[in-house]
Image (cartoon, rainbow, N blue to C red; front, side, top):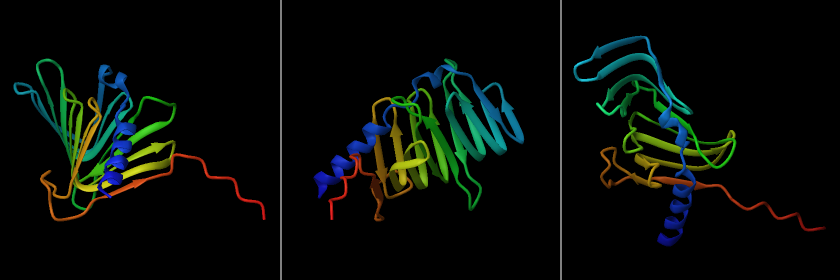
Length: 181
């Protein structure tokens, strides 16, 4: 059973591993209702219907704290209002309509490391168009798109917990033709 889960998880990770590479070279466009800017420390605190777009990457939440390093790398912490979720969506390389999307109470995106971390009620889906092909649900999910590594834990801190996660894999082979009656 452990081998089956490991193979299934590896299949999901390899499929998710190719985020749109050109996104990191595009400008970030940020929409919000309110902003507080700390230019000295390069910290921007945004509230109200926050949408961060960089190429095909779209991050949405009720609140975001955006930091920028002197080298120009961005990190964003998205926080959802009670009863809502923060979300991300990004096109994957390898086909015209391949996407990865996720949601959680809090999402941390680190552009330099190319890592997205989802905390509390985390969910990541792989889509072909609008069809979900794979889905991972857990309390914590870390997705390293550069190295093609995904980690899921059943505690929102990222430590192994007592709960259970769920991995759903859609069939990759076509259905057999019906047998003649």
